Length: 138
Image 1 (spheres, rainbow, N blue to C red):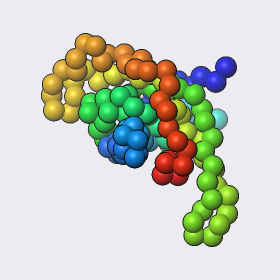
Image 2: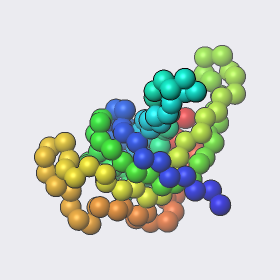
Image 3: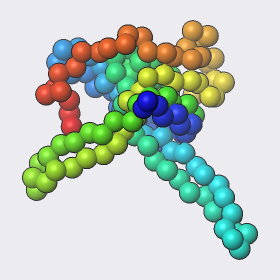
Image 4: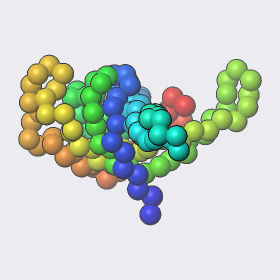
């Protein structure tokens, strides 16, 4: 089973792109803070940055309702992306969460408007979004 659940804060606005087939791809980074005390009693805050990728209608909804500073709970599969660096030709990779569901944490949007009830817990709109890997920007 490949399931990841993280609560975090968007570090910047969602980056929404459309590939030639018309499918939407949204990417964003969330920051998750962990507070703890050292053996000496000193309070420390550790921040973990996690990249998230959303496809199709979910990408469009996340782009519409979430902005820098919005809190979001994401559920998804951990996925490794690989590519060849254009500058030096080396193989590169990173892990991202492929969004399957998300939940609003903040009660109001940045514009002060309440979110529609049907978007309080957004499950996948369609189980499969057909995307040609050659069209992906990474």
